[in-house]
Length: 395
Image (cartoon, rainbow, N blue to C red; front, top):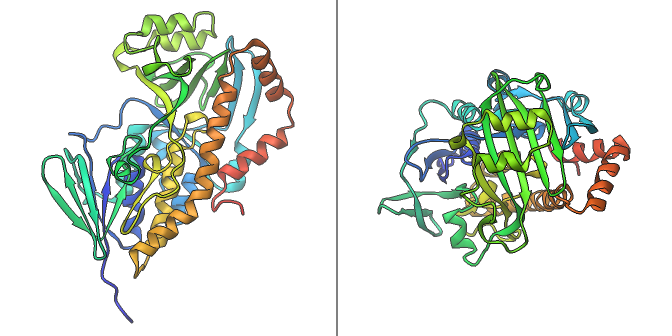
């Protein structure tokens, strides 16, 4: 039997996508070295939804993080859509679909998901910190990355998994500018109890040009986020900029459901994260030679579908499958990109379309949105969710 030399992958970025890539690549026999620009491995203070498709994709490579997430996060069986005062619009059930697919949906703190992926990688896999990538060179025999501090690293392939502001992507698409979502978002996790926040609670509250999300993420903690439209072209989300604090946020949500107001009230101001909603025009070429992109570095999306983390994990699984036993790494990377582009492009577009619907501000348009979600056949939502949550994807 012919023995192929072990490939060495340089993974730039130790977020969800980078760690998932390390776990899956190691599972197919690829050596991995991970680089992270931050001085310490801090996943931030927010949470994510991790849907069935991510769990199923990882299991296809015998990587099962569900037992870890059962301990660290919280399964949610339905997603409630409510008015701003907490009156029901629609509840979308997930449990029957999750049972049929064979994997649940989780709400989980980023730190807990990160630790679950680190456990899947194995304790002997170190992450090199303070390693901000500056540029790379790819050739027929391998790739070399230069870091801001002058360090260099060489390997057989390079995976750019360094997020929305990816330094690796900039070298692929230098003129690529963010595309505004025209709203700002505040996010936080906090110890929180409320009569309406039952086990596995997950709800979206809809106003006009505003939304609020609230979810149980386990261990007495809640994750919340709130949005507010800004005029198109407004720089940095003004007038809701960095000086727009907790008191002002609470004012935006005055008169909303009690649990919404209470979640904001008990959150320490310095733990609230503010982001400007944005994605990027879909990138047709993710790499060349022996490098490629993954996750938000390849296809950043607005958050309405809750699929950002799951798509990064799907990327990692497909990448590993193409590199398993590969004798031509460049061809394997192009195969990965070709397989992933149609699904990721469709979901990036779907996330933007849903975001525009959810952020509707005109009274008539917002009322029509609520009526549609209240009275449309449940089968329509079930089939849409099934198309997203099934792995391998439906043909």
